[in-house]
Image (cartoon, rainbow, N blue to C red; front, side, top):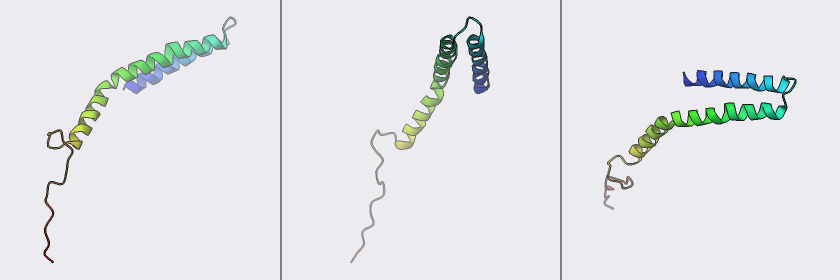
Length: 86
């Protein structure tokens, strides 16, 4: 659902930029500034902030998978090697 809103917002900003570039008093520099400051930077910030919880969950899952016993030490071989007689 969030990506639909992001795509819609980028469409609006792209339309604003095109209007700025094609206007009689507009310029390509103004269109570029409009696109960057109304589109790319705010959207990147919002998507980064809204993705924080997912990144935190992924980091915790990776940490718990790396340390199954919760001791803080690296997992080693828990089963002793079988001694074989010659």
